[in-house]
Image (cartoon, rainbow over all chains, first blue to last red; front, side):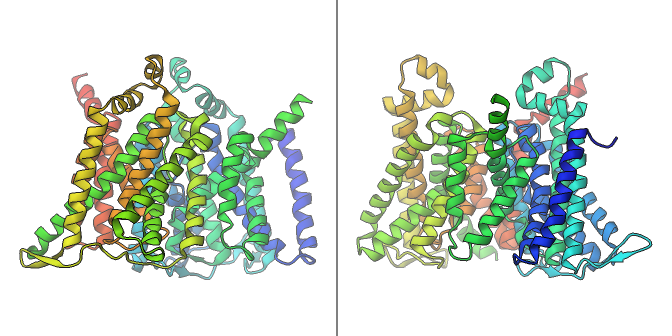
Amino acid sequence: MICGKKTLLEIIVLIILALGIPILGTSIGGLVSLMSTALIYGVYAMGYDILYGFTHQTSYGHSLYFGLGAYGFLISVRSLNLGFFAALLVGIILVTIFAIAIGLFTVRLSESYFVITTIILVWIGYYLAMNMVNITGGDDGLSMTVPPISLGFIEFSIYDPLVSYFTFFIFFVISLVILKRLVSSHLGKLFIAIRTNPNRVEFLGYNLFYGKFIAYVVSAIFTGLAGALLAITFRYASASYFAINYSVLPIIFCVMGGAGTLWGGFLGAIIYLLFLYFVSASWTNYLIIFGIILIAIVKFAPKGILGTLKKKIKVD
Amino acid sequence: MLESLPFSFFNGLIWALIISIVALGLSIIFGTMRVVNVAHGELYATGAILGFIFAVDYNLNFWLSMALAVAVVGVMCAILEKIVYREYEGKVRTTLILSIGLALILQQVALIIFGGEVALMKAPVEGYILLMGQAFPIYRLVAAAMSICFLTAMWYFLFRTSVGLSIRATMQDRDMAAGLGINIDRISMLTFGIGGALAALGGVIASPIISVHYLMGADILTISFIVVIVGQLSLKGAIMAAFLFAPLENVLALFVQPIIARVISFVIMCIIVVIRQTNLVSRIRKERIK
């Protein structure tokens, strides 16, 4: 069995919901594309949750991997003419290499130094991406024609919104299954132990650095995947993928939805996008609301929406 | 190129003084409350914007608008410390999220009030002097003198007064300081107020040199963080790191593109931090001894 009974149930519910959305989508304009983005941000948020929610490391620099994933895909499609999956693999490998190289050093730092170093790194990435115009296209960015997804016997064009929606959905489910399995494995227990009491983890003879490092790299990989998927949606990537705004997003998602629940990040992403969809058109300063929401959640529901709900259900 | 070297170096020194002021604010906030104050850049921008509004919209003179802007931001920060941060001090993660929220709010409010345009504040002293064959704005010298005055005042306050002693004690050991009868809550409030006021002060001093913009805080925030952690949280260390960073960047900018110069200096600072924090050098030595 690939996943537990509970996860299987969740996935079945999700599939039913996912099938329902395109049917609804014909009546509500933009719903399919909104849900596509939500799925991508969901992958991002769930990957980030491994780091933020499970090992209590707060990275402020994940947009570095987001941008790298996007550009890894885009450049291997544009310059190397690779197919869909090969390009995706290149993007993920690129992210993994960077995450390993950076993680080896940053993960050893204390909590606050880790935050600050990741902030510095994300700015380095952004400056370089803005500056290397011949590779990244700088602020204007580069566009691409996304190669069709070929499964050997059949080919899909990603330009069909339904195909892209279901592609993202499949990626989301795969990520969910992998991450759920990771969390319930022994390694996942180590993550939770690190969250609860890092000193004790060391006393018990576990390698604290190893656990933190693996969590960092795993979350970076899923961030890179999300970046590549977003580049696929827009058929475009620019230096703004490296900008610090994309680092703040998963923090907002995870805090809003509930850190350490995996699903919470996805819920947060949906809320964020719905909000963006309905409010940003009429009021451009909607970020104020998110500032207030962040503070309010820390004050009144520190476990986030899902965390608070779970607690309520357990008590009753 | 070489003839502009002293000019760039000098500019770097002045910039280092302004960075020192902002970073000093960040450093005392981080030191006393363990708050990674991401909103510090926004406080800097708020100071500059308020100064600009007081000076241009209300026609006040530069010095008065500076004092007003600094006072407003300082009081605002003291209040924010009480209502937002108080319960969570010492928890890096939680306060980080709070300050992200605060940064988003401040940034958008600044956008609403000031708009997205870029404006240059009029300097209180006009004119240029010749410095090694190049025209050098007098205001920059005034800014340097002002910064030195404020830094000296801060030094006096922190190292020669009893309140300063309490602040330093709280930075060293919060619980011990509380045990010795220092009112931690009041010290935190004061520190946050002073820290925010220093950020705003840096913003107002810098506003005639670099342009006022609602996102102007992003750069200085990162630089201040670098300076603070390279200086290992000591006030002297932060100022020394600022004097290492800013002239380095300014001189490098003569030889490579400005952005690359910044990237190189960031990377150098990052390497210093990682080496010092993870005790890389001593660990390698130990391995060798084994």
